[in-house]
Length: 141
Image 1 (spheres, rainbow, N blue to C red):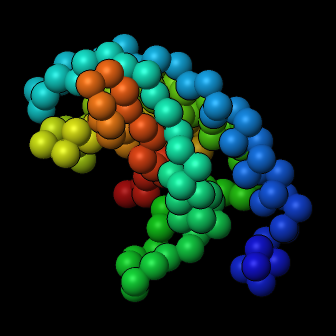
Image 2: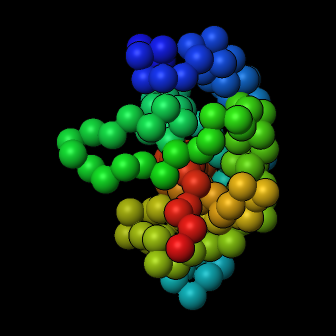
């Protein structure tokens, strides 16, 4: 399937395995206070289904249900690079209140990288835990 989409299947497999391995132990979210809400500290997990979503939508560039093109990462990045960006967002990312939804327990964290700004969305899944919902490259305007 990767080959049919015009990219190297071996590179895609390597990316997925590396991202999976590098995100097994994510740093603790120390909490954030912003004009749009407060998110208490908690453990962060990246579930396999959300990992698959990040890879399919924001690395492979698959689009579902006629949605506009996803803001995909360049194929030159590694899984380790993306894992480090996710970790940086968790520890020191800026809160984007416009993309944050306190009622649904979602917080949008953004960090600058050498290829552009990356948004990581965390969602509360319990009293003291979060999951990484998605991570994607923001379009530059």
